[in-house]
Picture 1 (cartoon, rainbow, N blue to C red):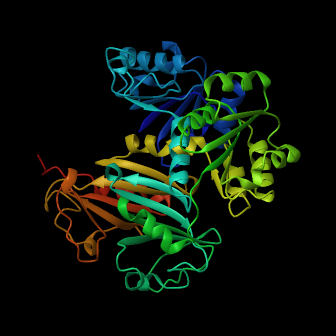
Picture 2 (cartoon, rainbow, N blue to C red):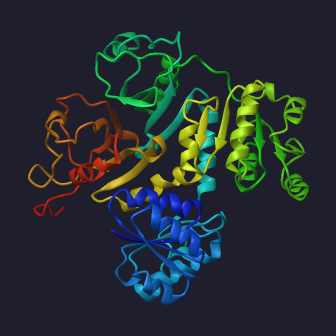
Picture 3 (cartoon, helix red, strand yellow):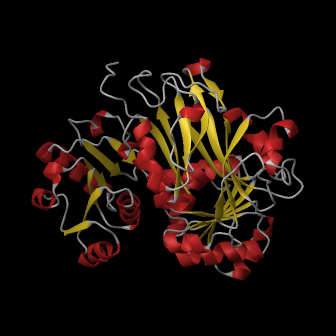
Amino acid sequence: MNIIIFGAGRVGESVAESLVSEQNDITVIDQDPARVRALEERLDLRGVVGNGIQPSVLAEAGAKDADMLIACAALDESNLVVCKVAHDVFHVPTTIARLRSPEFEEGSDLLGKSGFAVDHVICPEESVMRYIHQLIDYPEALQVLEFAEGRVCLIAVRATAGSALVGHTIGEFRQLVPQVDMRVVALYRLDAEMAPSASTRILPGDEVFILAANDQIRAVLAALHARDKPVQRVMIAGGGKVGLRLARSLIGQCQVKIVEASAKRCEYLASQLPSSTLVLHGDCTDEALLEEENVAEMDLFLSLTSDDEDNIMAAMLAKRLGARRVLALINRRAYAEMMQGSTIDIAVSPAQTVIGELLAHVRRGDVVAVHSLRRGAAEALEGVARGDVKSSRLVGRRVEEVKLPAGARIGAIVRGEGRDAEVLMPHHDTLIQADDHIIIFIPNKRLVREVEKLFQVGATFFG
């Protein structure tokens, strides 16, 4: 696809990095020549220096032939205007805008073709908040991702000694927990992927990715991880957009403390939050402050400032001082990879949380959901099998007959709609039917194109 990315900030850079790796033709527009030059040197893309809301700059970027425009500049108003210009002047088929304000809702008349012409909205702050809420709801999990409108979940969990399934082979799972229907789709040991088979033994410390029906999540987590007590006390380092949004969403659910370095911002936070939320003026890397505020009693410590180094230091310090679980917001990919296996329990990239939402619009074939895993290295994809035996590579075939690229695995099939939908953990002889939603784990992004082709229908299908 020919894709224009407007804005070369952290989100724009991550989006470009992800899409370039899939052989798309990418052009990045930014007013900062140094940013553009750095991206051109590091990635296989073209850069255009200028203000993207100007038609002449969009024309130079090739808007006339673009399939998609992704607007991820810092300001909502810039992103809205560039989508409008791209649609009205250059007839770009698909426009996606990063919008921080919750008042612009996807599908509203304001964002429709006669309005700002925004087809899809992404909000990294909202995505991070949803991600953290899942970790609060399921404290044993490293990640909980939803498919098929929430009917199926992909759960990442760190196996702990003493739990029911740890020390046993995957082939023994059904015998040990017959009431839980699940499928292990990936296993990482010491940061290296291991192909899961019936003879693979789960060891303490393994990072296990499991697909299961939504109502089975807690049972799956309990089988692989010692039961954690519910999250009740939360400390947030950083009262920026993400910190404030999260604190608001936790009112009535958890006891929350926010540590913020700016006195002026503290005043604003105090005016926006109820008295039950304690706002503290101070440095989140100050050991004395964290001890004084009883960080050791926290169920979850969240480093959400705009500074990667401060987030890493604060999270490590909180962990050393006794916080049960710590999460750091890390923008730089290199830093996030360095933190893998460190004392920081979870490293989250705001850009990576929205990559999946973007990828669902870039994917070919009838792909309805995409989740980026392992900091973008792997992917879980949900597609719909359309057509019939003649026109489809999936419909009317048994799972063992589907020609998947090496390493890719079918994890679950959702059949039917609404309340009648059935979640199947397929076996080798499971027959795929028309309109089945199929969830596939892809260990390497280089294999994505081959998997997408499975969901493309041949010319003989006219349904």
